[in-house]
Length: 37
Image 1 (cartoon, rainbow, N blue to C red):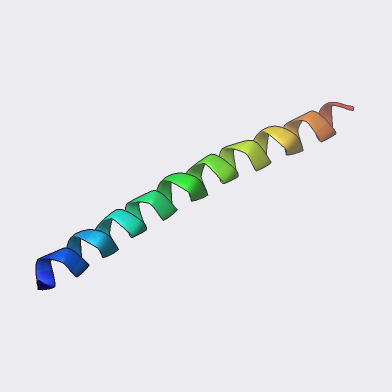
Image 2 (cartoon, rainbow, N blue to C red; image 1 turned 45 degrees about the vertical axis):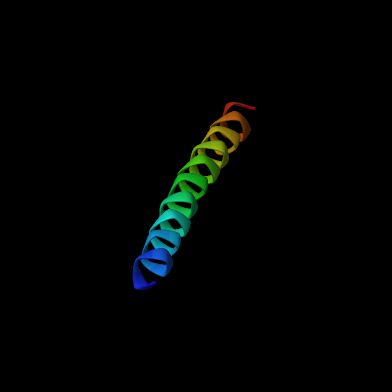
């Protein structure tokens, strides 16, 4: 059953990386809008 926890951990890490990248892109676009004002 070690493979179940390995796949679960890998999926969790990948989803965290994707969410982190999306958050970073949204934050960067907010900063560029504030600088334009």
